[in-house]
Each structure stands twice: as structure tokens, then as C-alpha cells.
Image (cartoon, rainbow, N blue to C red):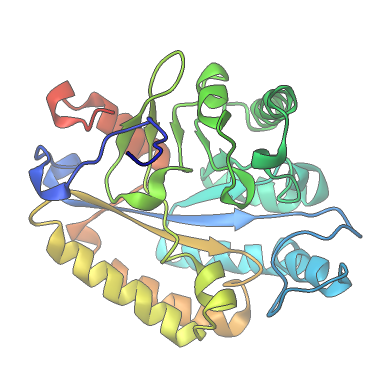
Length: 297
């Protein structure tokens, strides 16, 4: 037998229980934006178009564009189309660019914990240091936002073998780290109790698409449109969750915003056919379903 994480069992989508989202909708959709900050002078994170050694100033400045300009461009677009946003934020941004965090808070967007900085990878941390980091992030967000964060995405999507248990210990309601493999929520074994995994994309994430695969802005917009059309059709057979994952320093660039608007306008033409929502609401609704309709670990 191959080694297993022992967190959940394999489950084929066609064999799962049927349910509907609110108002009988079959496709839930949320838009996530990632806001990042890195310490200056430290080698970390993907560079614009290459792996750069040693550390480069331009890589830091690229993120700073998102914090100064790109993030606000995405907010303006979502204001224009009345789209709520899930904000996956390093707490370093709470101190570095509070105006951007304030703007999302004023919209009523959901703030999702994303560690202190993407320079810190949980897979490299000692368990006691990781526990302390999670506690610090949770306390800071609770103090600043006036509400405990319900969701967590590990910086750079690199959780440790202890992360899931530590998140349950810290009182989190759901985690995005496991959600790459599914288009529905599902329960993940953890100690002392299971935690809900929420869908989160790698394929429809602007960083791998634009930076690694070198998709153009127009190609990325086409990917969003094609993905939406196909998932809306497929949701007739099974209820699904679609996520569009953005980074303020990537899709917040003006020529990319124009193409992103085209994709979002296409989706909004089907607004009555979908549940346009936030991860916290998907998690809460899924937990309210009869137990036999929820995918157990």
C-alpha cells in the first residue's frame, strides 16, 4: 500500500449524495483575492517571469504594486459588478497597507487568514512555532476585524503535517489547503475533531496560469469563462463550487483588469442561475445540510 495522509477517503463525485445550494441553485461561486507582503531583502516568492537568485528588488516591488494600486483596481471592478470578495491576506498587510484592508472591510468582504507573510512556509516550521504563528495571526485579525477569521489558507500553499490539527485547535471553521482536489466541500479528519475543506483552485489561479504557464490576460479570461460555462452545465448533475483565485499584483494590472472585466461580465449575465457568495457562507450552509448529504472523512 502507498503511504496515505489518513485525512479523508477517496470519493467519486457521481456517487455522492445530492443537495442544492440556497434557492435551489446548483453552482456556488466565490472570487478570492490574495494580498501578500514580503520582508524587504529576503529571497522568497515567485518572481515576475523567472526564478531569481539572489534576491531581487523588482520581485518585492511587484507585490507592492498590488498593495498600492492593483488591489484597489480589483475592488473597483468588483464594486462595479457587485461581486463580494474573499480576501486571503497576510497579516503583515494589516500593518503595511491598512488602507487596502480597510477598503475590503468596508465592503463587508470576508478576511481569510493567510499567515503573517508568504516568506514563512509552515512546512518548514517547528510545531510549537507554527502553533504560535497561528495564534498570533488569529488574535491580530480578531482584534482588527472585530470577528474571528473562519478560514485559513497556508502561505504559499505549504501546510505542515500538523497544520490541519493546529487549525482545529485554534477554532477555525474551514481550511482551503486540501481543497485543490475537489469541487465540493468535504470533511477532513483532524484532532480533536474534523474540519471542513473548501474548494480552492490551482488551475484557475492567476499565479500558475499567468506567471508559470505564461497565459495572456485574454487567455486567462477565456479560461474563467470556459470553466464557468462547463461547471454551470455540469452542476445540473452534481452541486458544485467554482472559485476564481486572483493576486492583486497580477490581475490588478490595467491590461489584465480589462480582460478580467470581460470574464466577470459574462458570469454576471448568469447571476440568477448561480449562488454568488463567500467561502464562510458556503461552509455554514454545507454544515447545515443533513449529515447524510455531507461528505464524511
